[in-house]
Image (cartoon, rainbow, N blue to C red):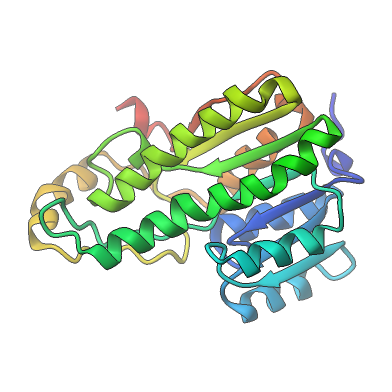
Length: 251
């Protein structure tokens, strides 16, 4: 039986969106289970609070936008040459805008944060992992990666894209010791803003969500799935999109 209290001892793991919600819970659990955590977020105060709460643990933080090259460079530098795991958690929503209402700015920003940022950070860590012959990458997808009724057009497209990208990483780099998986959360108690900016979306999506969405989960539930996929316990799992949604995907 695995001793989860030390299953990440000696390992360095990067967590994006570490200042709140799922990212924060993931960073905390990893640190408590022995990992050296490199946490990043766009809000400095969130990271300051995280470090204070994890006093005595090995936690380093980088403030910045993961879509920016300078932030990714700073993350890799903070890791110091060893990277055992990456949890791409940071993400934003799209106001539930349907295809005929989504504007260019929303589309580009959502795709940038939810797809391009994780791709660039994954691309940056892969050489280190491949050289070591082992590494674990976990991307946060969504119920919107499995269906079209969970969000707007941009968010849904971005989460389908990150699911496909995850499988591509698993296919190409699995033989080199890399495992890449995704977690697909349902409704979760986080700070991510999710207003409905479209009256039509409210009339179309609202009734669906009100009837099928289970009670929102605590972010710690998602952190449990993410840390399992980062751990050796899931070494036979690669290229999987794992729903962690209280059964939503079974409805």
